[in-house]
Amino acid sequence: MYSAPCPSRAALDRIADKWTALIVGQLACGTRRFGELRDEIEGISEKMLTQTLRSLERDGLVSREVHPVVPPRVEYRLTELGLTLDGPLAAVREWAEQHINEVEQARLRYDAGA
Image 1 (spheres, one colour):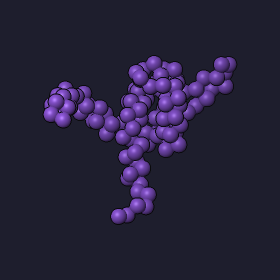
Image 2 (spheres, one colour):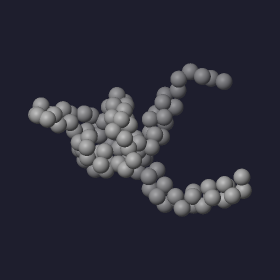
Image 3 (cartoon, rainbow, N blue to C red):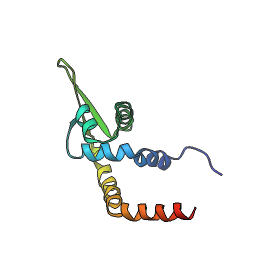
């Protein structure tokens, strides 16, 4: 078995994260402040939002701009690379919305038989 780091595996780990898909979806609509993202993404903690934004920034998908005002104003936006990710993730979000009822029914059937 080959165990060397695989670039496609690293990319899949990044985009398969549920918070990544939701953050990219929000930022595809335009620049957002941290508080706006927190309010728009139901269920995300401040810690998880911070961690995911930092990871997305590190990966070159999100840019962070700090405005020198008091209190500091920080804005996030998708980079050109990040914008290329919105299409594929939008397709996954659309699939999930279209098929969630079928998935839930399959889970119920499975759990009933287990």
